[in-house]
Amino acid sequence: MRARRTILLPLAALAGLTACTDGSGPAPPSGSPGLPSASVTASSGSAPAATRSPARFDKALHDELIGMFRRDQAERSGEPVAESDQTRTARLKEIIAEHGWPTIDLVGEDGEDAAWTIAQHSDLDPAFQQQAVELLRSAVAVGQASPGNLAYLEDRVAVAKGEPQTYGTQVRCGPDGPVPATPIHDEAGLDARRATAGLPPVRHLPRRDGRGLRRGRRLSAAVAPVAPSAVARRPCTAAWDTRAMQFTVTDVPERDRFEARNETGDLAGVVTYQLTGTIIAYTHTEVDPEFEGQGVGATLARAVMDDARAKGRTVVPICPFIAKWLTRHPEYEQIVVRTTRKVK
View 1 (cartoon, rainbow, N blue to C red):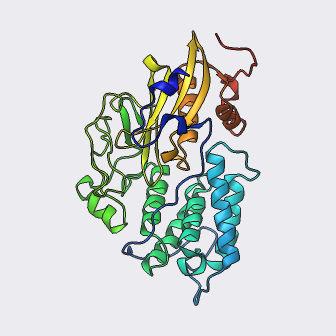
View 2: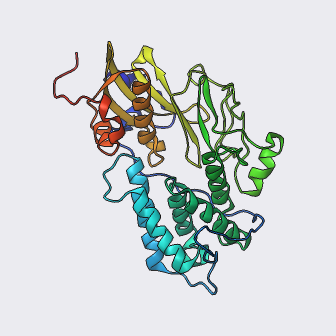
View 3: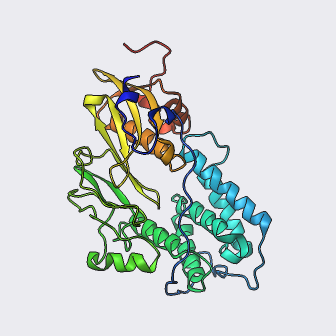
C-alpha cells in the first residue's frame, strides 16, 4: 500500500480516502445579474418561448430533471447507467417543447441547473445546444435562469465551432499544461464579463503556450492563491473544468501514479500503476473525501487511458473502478487486456 503512504492530505486523514470509487458531480452556481436577451430561432421552425407565464412549481418535472442530472453524473463517474446522453437530450427536447426552458419558477434553481447540465452534455446535437443557448439567454434576461449556466453553454457551443470563447470556461491539455480550448475573446475584459455571469475571476489564466495554471475556485477569504508547485508545472494529461473547479492530472513516475490536483494544487485523487515495458496495469484509484462527487475518479480514468493510448501501451485494468469505467467506454477496448493473473 505504498501509494497510501505518499498521499498528503491537509484536511483529511489518509485512511479516509475512498478506494476505487467516486461520486456524482457538483451542482453549478446560480444567481447573478441578467444578460442581454436575444431572439429565439431554430432550423426546424419557430422555437418554443423561453418561459411559460404564469409558471407554477412543477414538482414532478423538478424530480424528473434531478433524476436525469444524477444519472448524467453517475455515468461520468463510471457507474453503469441504462440511458445515454442522447436519451437525456431527447427527453429534454420534449420537456422544452411542452414547457419552454425549465425556469426557476417552474422547477427551482436545482432543476434549472439540471436542465443546463443535460444541454451542456448534448454535444452530439449541436443544433439543439444552439437552440438551448437562445432559450437560456431569454430566461436569464427575465431572472429565470442562471447567468453562469448561460456562460458555460455559450463557451461550449463556441468551442465546438472552433470559435473564440467569451468566458474562458473550456480548457484542454497543452504540451506543458492546461490551455484554453480555443482563444479567449478580449482577455483584458475577461474577469468583468465573468462577473456579470456570477463567475469568479480567473487567476493565472492558462496561456496558449501552456505557461501558467488557472488558480482559485469560487474565491473567498478562505481560498487564497498559492505558488505553483513542482508537480503543477508538469505536463498535464487532462484538464477538466467542473464549474466549481478545474482538475489537472499529471503522471508522477517516481511514485508510480497519476495525480489529480485542483487549481490551488491540492491533491484530489490518484491512480497507481505498475509499468512493465509497454504494459501498464492500473492497480488502484483513490479520491480524497473532500473532492467526492466532483467527477475526480472519472477524470482520472479518462486521463490515464488517453495517456496509455497516446504512448502505445497495453492496459491491464486491475482496479475495479477503472475496469467498471471501461465497460461504459468501449472506445478504449483495443488497448485493454483483461486478466486475472497478478502483474509482477
